[in-house]
Length: 267
Image (tube, rainbow, N blue to C red):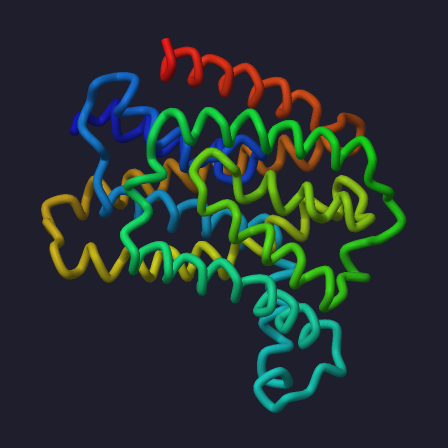
């Protein structure tokens, strides 16, 4: 793998991981559309680690609050904002972990990595995002996150195992329909990504350890660093734009890309 290809993969993952346009779809499509080889599990793990570092850095105040509540949560107490945040993140992560385990055990991942599936998911869930953003209220803040809402957003997050859905897109859609404002919906979605990326990275990491080519270590480190930088840029840009812009530009991109993919698939 050339350095240019490595940096392209890292930039693609970093820029699309937190935007509601599906990073997994872009990573799957890259080798399909360019004719290149798949980047492999080691690079996938590396870019996930990079984006994890980016979201932790960007939302460090929230991360620190959640970490501070873990000791009380472990004692079964939810009497502080930190403990409640940690508990809600746990609730929101359980569905995707359970469904992900089933998908992996049944070997369904490969069957869903087709251009047809990605095209329909990009198109369909793009329209869902538009509908949710246009019809959702904005009377809740991230600090008012409830158990019920965490479970609903967690179930939505599990749907994102379908390539092209977009983890951030579907959780933001759920949050908007539940009544969270755009910035609050994006913030909760980003915080939900932390335990989810840790879980998926650990799962992928086991496969890497079992069949690792340690010559990839340097390339993986480079990919992680560039993915982190790209993700920080994407996060800062999106959170700033949400102060004045809706999710419509992302919807337009999703519909356009979904249409192109379906034309390729059925043409």
